[in-house]
Length: 188
Ligand SMILES: C[S@@+](CC[C@H](N)C(=O)[O-])C[C@H]1O[C@@H](n2cnc3c(N)ncnc32)[C@H](O)[C@@H]1O
Image 1 (cartoon, rainbow, N blue to C red):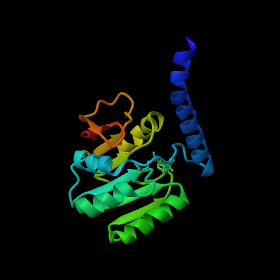
Image 2: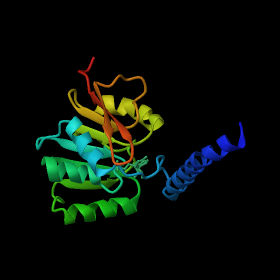
Image 3: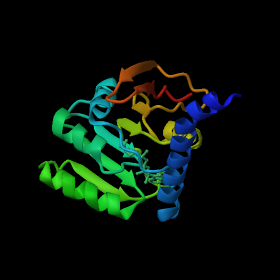
Image 4: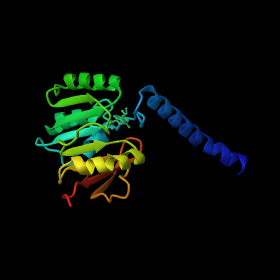
């Protein structure tokens, strides 16, 4: 590879290394956290909730809820009830504060729990922005705890080889986001 092409690739390599380092530091901060904290842009949050066909009758669980934005938007703009599951206590406290300010604290709860241990059986819609590996490991829990007809919306990542019912390529402020929807099938 000539010098010019190497120089062109440098910013890409550096940003990749930076993301890796930031992710590693973020994950290392709280034991058990397997995915770094990266926010879903607000336009993408709204599209995920539309894709999940969220209504006031729904209970929306965000697995790895960060600052609570999915749950708060579900309560504020769709009239739903929501629960955020998040291991990082600082993010759980921040979420509760933002929910209070948005006047949706009665419909938006945040639990400091591991997503693999939380009871998600009351959810009618699950949202997640995790990783391919974590999604795959969550699949048995999603299929056993959620009721048939519950919707799952994942930002960017698949759930193993489970074919989604719908995929939307949504143009966000900086890039295109792949949003996938699964509907939990009837029990065999
Ligand atoms: C990519 S962020 C997504 C945040 C938010 N859902 C959003 O879309 O803006 C992933 C979140 O999952 C949390 N997380 C990672 N592993 C977890 C685990 N095992 N249990 C609970 N939360 C976890 C991280 O702390 C982080 O806030």
